Image (cartoon, rainbow, N blue to C red):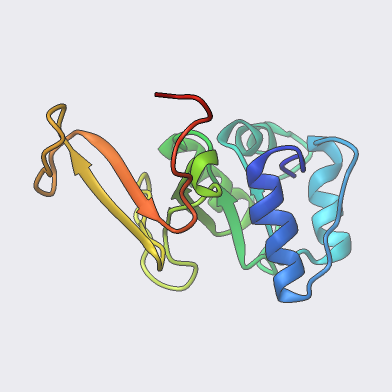
Length: 167
């Protein structure tokens, strides 16, 4: 449901579907009232959305708890932190499995992800993907130990080298 002008829509939806030989279902715009019906009609394997979209779906009165979306392999969430209560309500209400991750446009939108099959941790960005190096650093640029708060630094072949004319 992410628009194709957004890097998440391009990578998590379009390119992933092309690489796997899948079918991409496009809608003109995100419409919470018809979105779940579309997922069911086409038996979609995955979708990618931001937390606000998950919240809209949670609040739709016509969708009752126990709505079965178990055919979905992954409900991908990114672009902003997912509130724990939104995460839990969606999984309880729709039986869909949310996969949280982290990335940025400068790094083709995803650098880390919780496992699709395996143990996930709500509120976690998961582990770095193959080819990605991630470290947390302080304001002096020094690596920090686990559990410390700092800036996420990412390196990989998919991460851009810099900004045009940024000296």
